[in-house]
Each structure stands twice: as structure tokens, then as C-alpha cells.
Image (cartoon, rainbow, N blue to C red):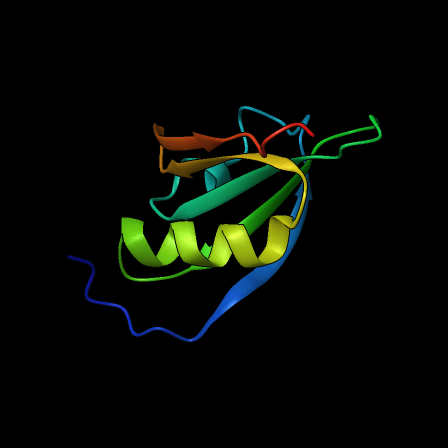
Length: 85
């Protein structure tokens, strides 16, 4: 479990195509990659949460009817794809 306190869900957005030499992207922490339903460029959100369950809850609140992936550092936690009607 993480030692940092729960502050809020979304802290910042970053473009998906970032510099791999940027040390900030290699820091541990939860990120959500949002894939817009209408297409377009994915958006990356940094999540300040304590665990996987809270990251998923925050992701579901942010995503609405869009697909998203949750990452903890370099590890994928989950991928969510909304049901098609």
C-alpha cells in the first residue's frame, strides 16, 4: 500500500507521446490513458490514489463512456472497455 495520502483523482494531464528520457514518466504512480469514443488522440491523466481499487474507481468516474487503461508505474493494472449497445 502506498504511503502518500489521498489528495484527489486527477492531478495533471500529459500528452501520450512523451519523451522516454523524461525522468518524470518513470516515477511510480498511477496513470490513466483515456481513449476517446469518437477517436482522436488518447489523453494521459496522473492519478493521486492509494491503491488499485481507488485508481479503478477514479478511472470509471473520469472515463464515462470511453475506454481506458490504468497503469501503476510501468505495470498495467487493468483495461476497461465500455459495453457496446
